[in-house]
View 1: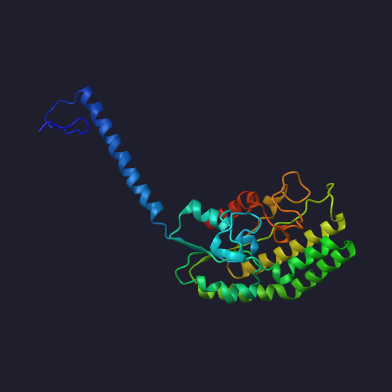
View 2 (view 1 turned 30 degrees about the horizontal axis):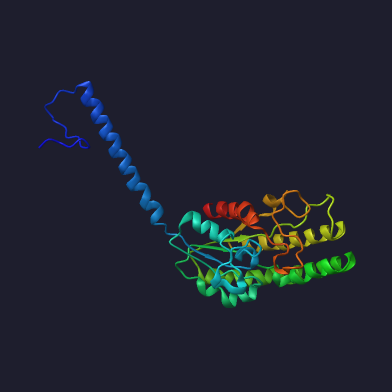
Length: 283
């Protein structure tokens, strides 16, 4: 039978003419292209990563818009870093149970059921609400510098006394529920770019709020690392994109929608949190 124009059937007795060599080379190249495609495609389709996102509003994506209907008041956004990572990496399974207002206690009681021994990747932001984040920022917005500084100092005192213990307890429960998972603990961004002209709160209040965030992040880093977790610090990537900067990734105080105040825009999730988490998950 005469081969079709898309096939090449070698004749072992035919002379290796230049034309025949070119045809053979083209056929081999086409075959290799198909084989490479067959090898590469299953690697992506058969991802073994089973990812669960835990935590508070910085993980659910408050302030980033595009909230899923099923999430209700938890306000889980398709623009949040966990959803962005899942969309880009096609894990074998993905679920976010992160929820606005979550504390270490509520994560332990209502989110850890999403974990199992088959979970291979976990992310979390937590701790700010345990220290009274929303109350502090409301105090600073509605009252003067003296009240703001006092509220932040009270939270710092509480963090120094209790935060490490709260985190260690929660991290131990996460490890018990997901013994085979890489756990990535992400920090909070520092809110204000200092030494710039900025309306609103005083420079003293800005500096004190930043000091409080740095304290919480540093305590979190120590606790995460002592539990064998990966600490993914977003503070440096948000520099230049803080409040009082020219290219903000964070909502300023919003009296019309207080819950989004001091949370990342979609640009803060995609430009700040997502690349930091992506790097930590791949390490």
